[in-house]
Length: 424
Image (tube, rainbow, N blue to C red):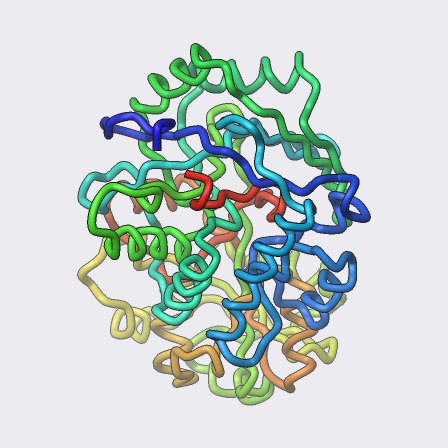
C-alpha cells in the first residue's frame, strides 16, 4: 500500500502495478479485449469473443458456467493460470495510465488509476442511476474470487487544468506501451505515467474536483460493498477507473434501449393507445429513428418495434395520466425524463411489466435491441438519449435517474490493463 497516500478531499487517483497481456503470448491485443461485461449481450456476442482468442478477457468477466460459484472459481483459476503461463504480467512499478481512444475524428483521453472510494455523503463521486441488487451481488462474488478489478469504470469530471495538460503532453510526445485497433475500428493506445512530480501535479489538480459516474454504477456499488467487508485499511479502499476530463474531451451520450421479451409489439401498441399518440412510422430503422429524434424535441417519445420491419412512434403522452403516474416528490427535470415516463407510465401502469430481468432487458446497441425483440417475439422500446448537462445537474442534486437511463462513451476496452489486489 506504499503507493497510496493519506485520504484527502476530492478525487484521489493512485498509481498501481497494472496487469497486462504479454503481446507475444496472444494472437493480438485486439483479440483479447472485450466491451464492458454488461454490453456483451447481443446474440452470439460472448461466443464471438471466446473464440477470438483462448485468452480473451471475456473468460474472466463473464465465465461460461451455469452455476455462479463455479463461474467465479473458473475466472479466478484462469486469472492465476494466465499469470503462471506468462500470458499476463504485472508492470514493474506503479503507474497511472494515460489511455487514448481514437475513432475517426473523435479522440478521447483520460487516466486509468486506482480511485480512493468515498461514501455517498461526501459528494465526491456522483452516481446518477439506481442499481439492481442481482448484478451487484454477482460482480462482488467475481471480484472476491479473483481479488481483482478486471475492468475500469468510466468517470467524467469538468477540469481543464494541469492533469489534462500532462495527459495530452504524454500522448503527443512519448511512445505508447501498447497500441491496437479493435473490431469496431477504434484505435487504443496506453502510456505509463510514473514520474513522481507529474503524479503529484495530477493529484493536486484532481483533489479540487468531483466526478460523475458515466458508466459502471453496479461496479461502483460493488466496490463500496467490498470495502465495507474489510476490517481496516486495504487495497479494497480503491477501485479501478478511467477518469476523463469532459472539459477537454466531452463524452457522447446515447440511450439504452429496453427489450420486453414477453410482450408482443402488437399488444404493446394496442395497450398504449389512449395513453399516447400512436403513429405507424416507415422504416428502415434509420428512418424510424429520425422520426423519434424529431418527436423528442417536443417532449417524451418512444419507438416500438417487434423486429418485423414495422415501427410505431409513441409521443404526446396524456397529461392527466402522466401526472397521476409520475411521483411528485422529485425535481421537474426528473419527472420529464423519458426513462421516468417509460417506467412509471408505460411499464408500470399501461403494460404492467414486472421489473425483473426475465421481463426487461437493457441493450445498448439499437440494432441488437431490434434483433433481440425479433428473436423472442417481444417488443423493443427504442429511446432518445438524454443530455449530459441534465444528467450532471440531477446528480449534483443527489437525484438518481431510473436505472440504465444513459450510455456514455466511448467506453474503455476491457483487457488493456487489469488491477490485481494481490500485487498490493
